Length: 433
Image 1 (cartoon, rainbow, N blue to C red):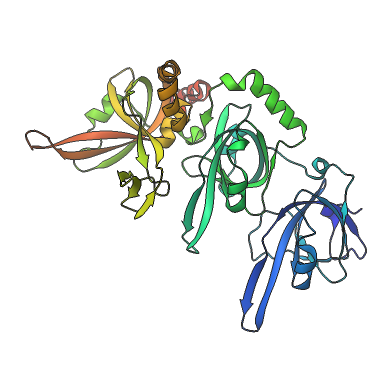
Image 2 (cartoon, rainbow, N blue to C red):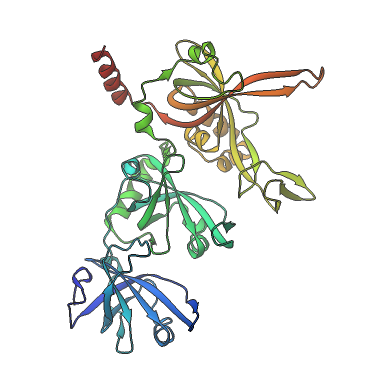
């Protein structure tokens, strides 16, 4: 058999043995001179990957025959240059077109796990990759969100979306977004299972996140050594570990020169006089209020929703939902060597502090009060770098109806203090004096 990575238009006679990793739906096109249909698959062997596309009669011939996760012998397909007009995650400059002479036969006696190679990236290393880079990742699933139906702005079509949280031995966690059929396929049964993903896209929204694309591959509990290693580690250490979300650029924050003290932000009147000021602090969380820890939010825009007639209504989206999404809203007291202040943490930054998603924390509040209180104790008395925003809020007092104003401080992003990196930076500053 030919390795996939050496197939080119200059190979006259070849045959490959490959795993079908993904298969698209049958798609239809319409032009001035007629209509047509097509579908595509992504094929893998130990050497690489390649896209294959079938048109018209070959759609009828091969669509039902080719099944994801099965292995096939394929020959007599046309090799063409990959269409650079369309962005693709597939790492191959060529692709295959199935024709009338194409021969495809299923192989029954081979292990699919030998047909795909991975180059896994640790979750903690994702900050080293730029936005839109394509990587492989493996992790254990600790949270699966409810499926959401949203409207894609560019096409105005509905699409299913689901977020899952994965962890690895680096003790970091990241959100992986699934779309379409993958959002439907990977449900709550994925919890505490391993998922290996090939060709996922790195995003930079509030730090780092991952997206499973149409041509990406996601495998539950693959039969590879990394799966066993991850499960063994989690069973011994992982279930008791705290994981840091990748929702703040820890490298940028560690090296920022202009760290304000809490005394400075008040002395410099940041956020006053109708100004909106952003700044960086290094402070310790000394107390977290346990009263109100969340708000009921719209699953689409995250704005607050109100309950009316047994439904939750969003004024911004003009939509109603059977159930709202709960999102963090934490009020915390922070201190440094100069002063104390109150800071508000919203969902992503609060998740970094608590190390547990808000839905699980609410469940603990109802079912296990001791564990609920211990979550707050564990989250307190820890130092962080925090990007903050200060803004003056004006309000009317309830009893006297007087107009008053106060500065409100919100956390925009957060990262744990890396004392080695911070010490090197301080040494550099002192050396330049």
